[in-house]
Length: 244
Image (tube, rainbow, N blue to C red; front, side):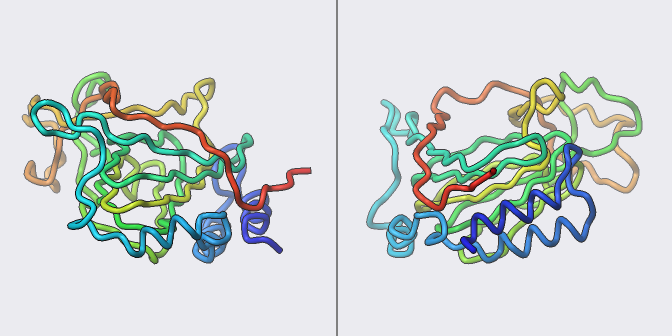
């Protein structure tokens, strides 16, 4: 059975409109996604280029502005494989220096598998405050991960309120990130993607639980993604899922 077809079949019996049916079902999906290789999705040539990529030789990517900064980052390609009420499957192909800004997955479980390449990952979870905070303003978040990730590596899981649900990616080499979301983004169901930036507002008085130090917390506020952030849909060249 083709690898993508097997993943689709497992997702179909493991997810509902409310997300994973159980911890065991989620682990089943993870184990199948762990086995997915670039060749299974028609990206072996791209993976070969990434394996031979030398950052010192190629340098950065993207058009530079007058001050020398990469103001016009290369667009990211999204290969859409499947989406239904319970889950979505797709691949983000990221050129070197491209960035997916800090964003969230409200009420969603996310499985991510780096198929090839090296990237920087930064992720946060919201901190439950002692007193309610206006969500339209800056909110405290705890750093979960700030590290470099290289393929081959295992699948990561982000839960609705833990595991680094708010995260960003920066490609060091060409990268491909395979994502399974359950349930998928849905505006009508309140699962919109929001983007965030570091806030200069840091009113800590009486807000944080006593177990959390202020040094462990970053204050994030919602923002619009930068104009340089561009995602384009591209053709998926791998085995197409038969959903009949």
